[in-house]
Length: 627
Image (cartoon, rainbow, N blue to C red; front, side, top):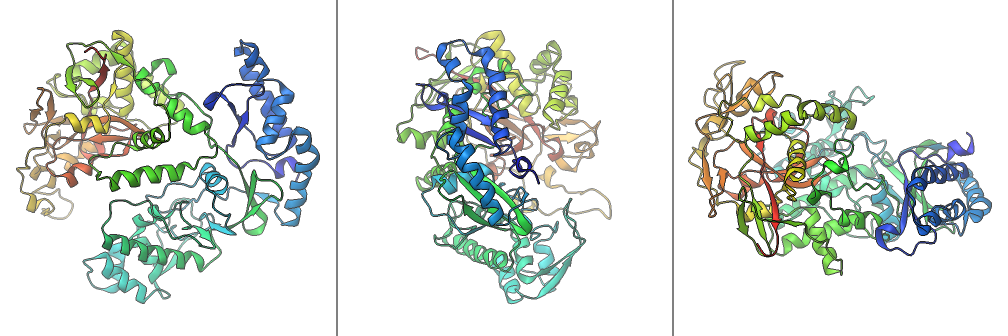
């Protein structure tokens, strides 16, 4: 294999390189430069590409100096652990070639992305590994389990019911399932023939231990992290789980599942990689897999290009409301070097619960991290405010006056929809972004009464915010989770027969429930077939229509602002993580029921029609200090 191909990147790799001759700090101190590999030709291409894009916009002497080619070569070389570009060419690069040959590494491979990881598992990324290897102050392990090459969770759809079928008896607790499976830990108990897409195996025999791990696979997500030594060998530190607010008994059970997981992955070399630092270079670590496969990680590596608009290309920057395009914190987290971000998130979330926080009072990662950084001396960005407007209802919160609109109506939204030809634009932008967006908004907005709340995707709500700001100069946005909880009225007691909620009587094979869960809840959404919630075939039909029914009711907070009292409606909030956003509903009386919808696990491209829900929104902004 040619040297350039040998050292090619197997994923997008961005390095943080000092801007030559720059006196700036923080996010303007570095260039974020994409490199396609470690070959000198890759470095030349990276510099040429950066200069082509940036020189035409360089206006000051300092900006032009920061794009000098020879200085950029040195900056990239230093980010790779060399003293200069010349040192990289003459010393480090030849050393890497010899190093690969000595260790039998000859096939570049992505050894990080586990194709068949279990559900609720966040993917490992190169940045997460870089933070752990270079910024945690923890010793490098000899090996780590990434999962690549492991078929442990390749079977699809196997769980608790399968344990009971194998045992021929019913287990009423996970502990009982655990006891049964552990007794058969090494015995093959089931042949799994339903495999996940992309798996080349036609079947996989499951032991009692692996069947147990499938039965409680949701626990694995909290273990598949890099904070402790959960995935490391040797395992020196105690395991650290990314699970919170658990009882002692729940923690004890989780620990038993973890030990079972370790026993299983340690029984094979599948999924493990050797961790080998490049000698006399504190910036590059190599991962070695089977059959000469290898990968590499760079200090302060990033997985994507920094963008002040991470919703591009669906939104152009000028289309975003200014309140959500503020990016000082995002830039700080992206360009800060030597920081272990996964540990920062974990510490922030742990403190939230230790200080009495609950799922219901969860403010989102961004707020929690900002609080942690503020304690370290980080200056939060200036809040954008606006004049008072009679369309909005003022709410006095702890430190500011929040102006909040009524729920946006079908009529209001579709005036914007028609005026800006948003129906066509949103579909074109979704194709450009490669997002599968709800294509037929009329399926959830065909109510005769156009003064009812509109139902849209999160992206549609943001588009409306952007237009509203451009027309009124008010810095509107969606409510945050924390703000919504402060202004929402207490949920009224649920009048439905709670004891019968999960007793669904079926009227014979192939028929729909006669006594539906959704109907018992007083669901305020039904299809054209008069079925409630998910019982309606209109949830899935391309031309189906979900409408509000006679159960739809409003109730007001102390300031007279209306909220939907009936189950079946949720409000989009501004809290977003990746391509998921928070959704919240006022209809649930108890914290557990309410928290089930209050999460950032809802796709920003869907209306949740397939769940028998309508999803609307309201807009808000912070009033000037003299309001």
